[in-house]
Image (cartoon, rainbow, N blue to C red):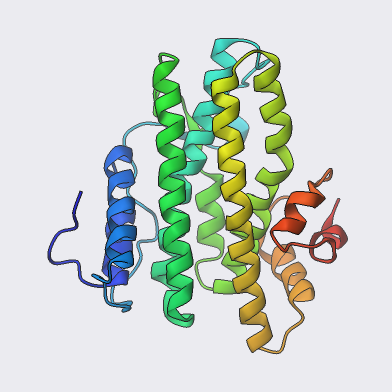
Amino acid sequence: MTLPPSIASVGAACAHVLLTPDPAAKLMAARAVARAWRLGRLAHRFDAAMPDRPARPAAPELLPANRMPKRGRIGSDRARIAMLHALAHIECVAIDLAFDLIGRFGGEFPSAFTDEWMRVGADEAMHFALLDRRLRQMGSHYGALPAHDGLWEAAEETAHDALARLAVVPMVLEARALDITPATVERFEHVGDSASARILRRIMIDEIRHVSAGTNWFGWATNGLGLNAANHYQILVKRHFRGTLKPPFNDSARRQAGLTEDFYVPLAS
């Protein structure tokens, strides 16, 4: 897929991804934008407003988290499909989160910020493709089940502040995935679904890099403002994150990402 000739800037390209409703087309748009940036075809210019909400397809139906159906034990095909569908939805929204971060806040950072988050956006598109393909192998597809909109609610809460966005999305929500994915992989392996387990292991390797990107740029920005990174992180999480940080934490994976215990342990419930 190539971008329309009218799209010549990073800002316009990011808005294009967000305004593409069809998941398959969004995946292709994300890849095309990341490639165009890598090849030097997009000006480092932020001349397009990011939408308040991305365009969404008719399916999946978006429900409040407390109305989501229970998935049940992962041993059944139905429960495994439900788990993979939930993860596919997270990755689909993560495409929008990556490109919204660039388009909304990229002008506040050096071009290396755009380099890194373009790679993240391309990763999220690949993750979504892997999960949707696995769902189809199991007789389902993305959109077949309802999903919840909690990830984009976090984006709305932090739409005014780059540091708040970095603190809440990569450094809380994506870091949480580092905590829970190993146990999820074990459950898939235990029931003999090694194909799904391999996908989740691959995604987790990439997610360590994504958390690292958030942590590194958060540190860059707080250092420039003369702020203590861990203290300011705690202030922003208390202010903008609606949930709680619950142990157990995958301290090893978090440490690989540069997210050390002095950031999150003081916030643990």
